[in-house]
Each structure stands twice: as C-alpha cells, then as structure tokens.
Length: 514
View 1: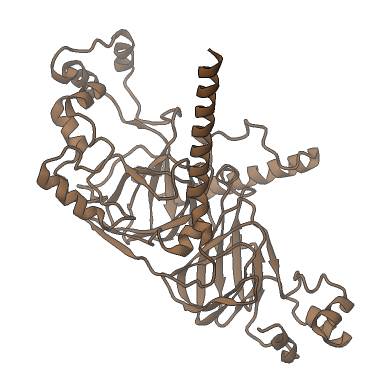
View 2 (view 1 turned 180 degrees about the horizontal axis):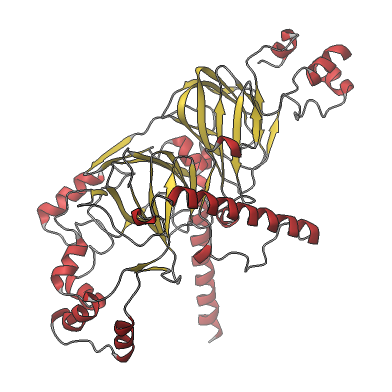
C-alpha cells in the first residue's frame, strides 16, 4: 500500500510543479522581451457598433505584454448603451469627455434603488408561495409575479468628464450616454494583477448582445463561420453557449425569452441604441428638477471629507493607514473620483500647469485593486520635470495637445524620443527616467499606474534627488565646481512642473543631457 501511495504523491507533486511552472511561464514570458525601444501607439483595432465605436490597443504588442496591461477607448453616442460585461482584470476608466451613467453589480449586495410598491401588493407577495409551473419553461407563475413587480436594482452612478472609475475584476457593469454629446472613455486593464487568475490575455465577457472581441479582430471571421455552420453559441455572450431549454428552466422563462438572451440574430454589436430614453430609478433623474450635478458634487465632497477624517484618525492612533476590514464594503464603496476639476490639483504652477493624483488615500477601493492614476495639464512649452516611478509601471494616454517625450533606460539609452499626439498611448516602465515638454498647444494626459500608492522621484526642481545630495558629491560625480553644484541644486525652485523660461547657466543643464 505504501508504494501506490508514494507513487500517487509523486504524481501530484509533479502535477503541481508543472502547473506552477506553466503559470510562472505565462506571467514571465513577456519579461524576456528587452526594453530596447518604446513607441507611442494609436489604437490598432476598430469595432463599429450601432451607437458607438470601440477601439483597442493590440495587447500582443511587446511593450504592452511586457507590462502586462491592456487598453480600450470607447465612444458612446447620445442615447447609446454599452451592454453589461465584465473583464478578467481590475480596471480604471477615465472619462475623457461627455457625461452619462454607470451601473456596477456587486455580488451579494442589496438592490438599494427601488420604486415604491403599493402596500397591498407587498402583503399579497408575502402570502404567495412560489410553485414552479409544469408548463413549458414554468412561465405561467413567472408571468404573474413579473407583471406587477416594481423596478429594483443596485446603485447607479452618474459620471462626467474628469472622472476616474475603479472596477474590480469580474464585476459586471454597463454605461449609458444620457447627454447630448459623445461619451468618450479610456479603460486601463492590469492583467498582471493578482485578481487575474487566467493568462495575460484580456477577456471581456458580455451578458448580452452579439459583440465582437474588441482585442481580437480575427474573431469576426470566426463568428461568420459559426453562423454559416449553424453552431450553437454564435451570439457571443455568456448565455449563448447554454442549451436554450436548460437556460429557460434555470431562469423560469419561456424558450423564446431564453433565445432572446442568446442574441443569435443580433447585429448591433456591443453599443446599442436605446429606443426612446433609458428609464431607471435614480435620485438624479429628470424628475429631480435638475439638481443632479449639485447633489453629486456635494456627495463627492462629503465622501472626500470623510476619507480625510479617517486618515487623520488612523494617523493619530498610529494605525499606519491599515484597514480594519469593516471600514468600507464593496456594496457601499465609492468607485469614482473626479480629477479633472482644476480646484482639486495636488501640484500647481501658474506658469506651467497642474497635476491631480488619485490613489488609495483618495479612493479606498484602489487599495484592493493596487492601482492609481495621475491627471496632468501642461501649459504651452511647459516641462514635466524629469523623474522616475519608484514602484509602478505607468501607461500614459494623451488626452489633448502634443508633447515631446523621452524615456531613458538603465544604460542611459533613450528608448523613446517621440512627439506624442492626442489619442496616442505610451509606456513608462518602472524606474525608467522620463521627461516631457508640451508643444505650443499645451499637453493634457492621464497616467494609469500599477500601484495603489505610486511614488515619484524627481531629477530637477525643489524636491529633486540632486538637491538632496551634498555639494561635494555633485562636484566629484559631475566634475564641476562648487558654485556649479550649487546652481545645479538651487536654480529651479519649482517642483513637479517647470515653466518654459530657461533657467540660468544653461551649460549645466547640458551636462545632464537636458
């Protein structure tokens, strides 16, 4: 008996090691590509829907694979609905322009938005006991219960330009453009995050519609082939692969309704046009007398004050900012923060621009996602001081304007030296030095970072690493005089953003290659 047991144990050990090695290979193979050359990229894939456009950057691009990230830009036309879906990685969504609503569905959370129900109906509902009908799909009893039910759903959040939205992996969400101009959003997916237990291929699972794979343009050919062969599941949403009769029984609906869920003949793609207007339960509805924006801003300010108060209490108690596990549940979590408002800037230079940061201290859910973001506005010809990120990769999207961007690796090689234009995206790897100078038109960007509390070290300005070094260290390191060392340390009194005016002793700046 001991020999079979030992053999079985050995087999299990080999199987476990094989799985572990396979997973390490999946998540490590992208690191084999050397960071010898980066480039600013525009979206590679384009999908036209009935009421919008979805564009994605090729996730198989070496620099995206190396960082383990993916990105999508989605444009939703007025009265357009992006169908409910979820992805296999945590994501940050930045609203570039427009306004709308977003609904996120967290498992196990109550449906806190509901219409009022007549008391008579409530009493009647309590007295009824559900007895599945033996009719086809059990639709008899279902129709009776469904006809009189009032609308009830989870919380709806209004979104606007400048919002950063955080969503965990696997959380289903939908969005709707209730404004008068296109709603444009850029999504960042962190595929290397611990929440992704699959491979580093971005996967979007739709709950409705017949969408194309936004990360795989070749999927359209596969879809057409399935339709020609009459295969089941050509609706391309998660209901499509189930047997229709079994699905009807599971939902207690008739087979025709189940077939509608499978969307086998739906050619509208992933963003559909709403017939009439989308009506849902919301405190910001049209019946609220136009108070939605004001109430939303007040709610956001109150939430920010509560977050700051919690931080002060933790500091006073010496808690080091650690969660106690009950401070905020997903059901009541704040998912968004507006970083487009100039009054919310964390760094501001009247001659150079402003920077707003959102991390775990501003939006607690980011601690769980291990992500953060930075929104920057550079005025004409202003310089974002040369710097590096201590603990994060950064994927930067150009919102407006142009800028010359340089990224330098550990060998002193410039692996990116390009004029970045609106709509392009580029990678700044961890510890790689980067500098950017806006054009005459200025430059606006959003930077997604792979840590919930990203740290930045600067190479110029009031808080630079050079200013923290002793004069004699600089003298010997650069072979310069003491006066030149002093000038190098103190000629720039600005911090993160530098004005376009050239500082004195430009010869010293050339020593560092600026």
